[in-house]
Length: 74
Image 1: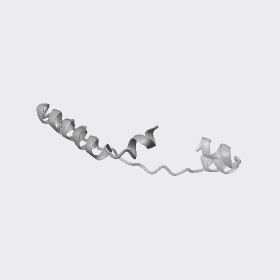
Image 2 (image 1 turned 30 degrees about the vertical axis):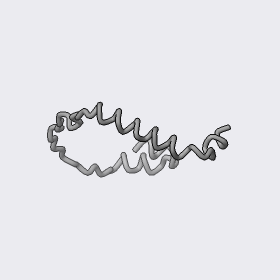
Image 3 (image 1 turned 45 degrees about the vertical axis):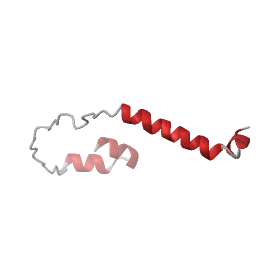
Image 4 (image 1 turned 180 degrees about the horizontal axis):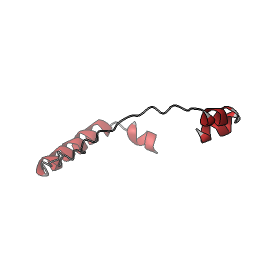
């Protein structure tokens, strides 16, 4: 049924009328919408990175654990 409708000889004329109708209704509803909105800026937070190195007992304890558990312990 849809194929028959699209292949109908009057279809181009129907589409022209439909597009004309859509353009006419859009020109009536020509509104401007402000989409910029307000800007929210996150405060700057400075962090200090400290590298932690294992020493002594910690290094020996982590070294003796099997790999899946070692990752969680670290």
